[in-house]
Length: 317
Length: 272
Ligand SMILES: Nc1ncnc2c1ncn2[C@@H]1O[C@H](COP(=O)(O)OP(=O)(O)O)[C@@H](O)[C@H]1O
Ligand SMILES: [Mg+2]
Image 1: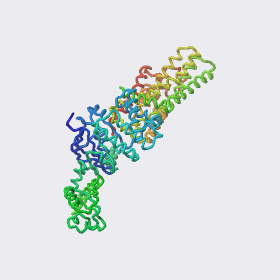
Image 2: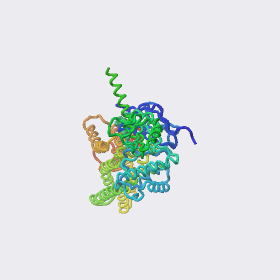
Image 3: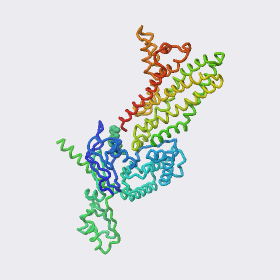
Image 4: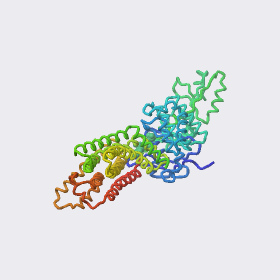
């Protein structure tokens, strides 16, 4: 087992003639780790994947994937171990699903017979085996997306880069997809997936990176991000009714809104608060809500905006 | 190697599937059998004299058709995949740009080559069975070989276009212009040069200028061996040039290689 990270980005930047698509990105990804990449459209998510794939070269800094710079000739063998799902791809419409996948399997180095066999297995895995003899032009959006995923899974890659993998998938297919991610992760596959759809992702990623206009706003496990953001935990006690607003200690955590009976408690006070609440005879239930990925994401974006405004203000002064 | 074959195989079967191979073959066969037959009827007898007329008219037809077909077949080969996103995906595979280019060239070139061979070969065979003269086979094999090279040359030129632009519609427009240039403009310019510049262009000079057009080289290859009575225009003068058929073939092969190398160069520089 190697201990060195699978991917290392150090101070990586990508400059286009008219804009900076990425700026000073530092990141490491270990084997078997799942990283979620989040940001609005144009944040630089796809650019980062292209840099890791080596289809574009960084303007600054260094990209290292499995020990090589991916945009060099030395990256040849690394490519056999990477699966990629591009964000907008429409496969050869006139070919059948099976033909498309067999073709890509051959390009990954499989010989004809093995390629077809592997393609069938993958189509079964993603659930489009029933339509594999039909031309891709008859596929629905969801089926196309699954075909794309099957393509990325060819040859059991060590590293998967999935650009908006759940776009066009219905909820069940999305759940299937994340189950597959969990399974691959348990087999030691590293995954980077980027998305602007946040709900449902957080249980399946180890760490998250938040990008905005090419800048990395935050990176870390969800717990770390939550802690850094210092977002309070929402605790809703049931059965206390009026007592809530008469208790001086609890009142501190209550928002001013009269109808509101939610306590906003900092992470470190959580256990103490629970203990305190349990001393009430009348308490019958407690709901605990940690800040979810969406709230954390919003927090960092808002934070970034504020910093930006401050800069503008001080520049103007 | 496996990868090049995979790409070549896909492109070739694409050509089979969307009926390119069969249509081109049919067009060539109908035209050449028609010309051969009517050529013979018109001259009253079937023989070697009418054979040169046949080859001459076949060549002047092929010089319009083959470049057009090759450009049509291949102009969107790269830009089409770029638009649908598969080109980006292919570049993340363990497949070099040169391998992809070669694979496509072998596959689509194979379609053009096979169609040319089958289409024109059919009429060669029919004619041979009729007159039983090996001269038929000799002239036709020269014709078919040079027609294949002409097709491959324009396939490679189509790749240059397909890689140089980022929109399919633009590639189509440029391909049409390129065809028009080599089919008509170049020769008109040559004629203008002949007529306009008094004593200006020698026979040698004219032949040299013709080397800049694969279409003209193709004409030269095929008309050089014929009675000059069947040939007219600027070509008639150039035919008596000093270049042998072998040399002409070499220049034609260069016209396949150079655009291919150029396409590879553009591909290397291209970012998606
Ligand atoms: N080839 C290119 N030339 C110029 N600008 C580009 C190019 N590719 C991407 N960009 C720009 O870089 C920024 C980041 O793009 P991208 O990485 O695709 O964002 P995301 O995937 O997060 O939506 C965008 O503003 C985009 O317009
Ligand atoms: Mg994107």
